[in-house]
Image (tube, rainbow, N blue to C red; front, side):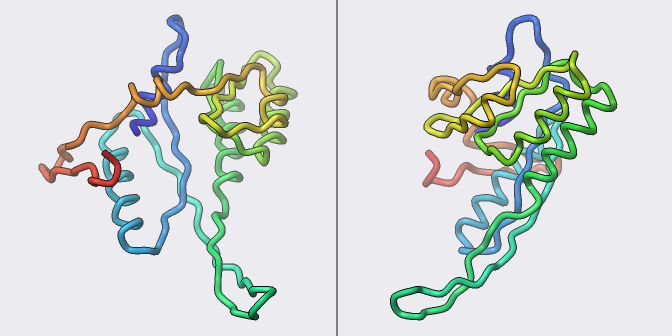
Length: 176
């Protein structure tokens, strides 16, 4: 999905998109999933006025209560904090009038409440992905709505993208 195009498609006619910020963490396994994510990120890197912010995965131990088997489970870290810092920084630097936040993560509530408290002229709009919704997050924002599947369908990346170095990125077959 072209996240920037999705954001553009969600704007009102009198609004303009100045910058798109994407927050993620690089996965390390399984290899096929890692390749798909790398291709997706490389495709996003071809967009203008687009920034990517990285968190990380931390492995936490887990033990099965039935058999005692021990393994490690990856947990994404820093993404929420990166989003919170960026929205507060952008509000402080007067980089937006309306921030469109595509999320259903209630961990972002404190940062949204802080933006609204410190910058009462700024608005935060939550766009919830389909089938994902946080009452607390929605209640913290000035406005909210659920992204339609139609908008997502209109916001797909092309099946092939040519990078600046001439390399052609191809959409993985499993995503078509």
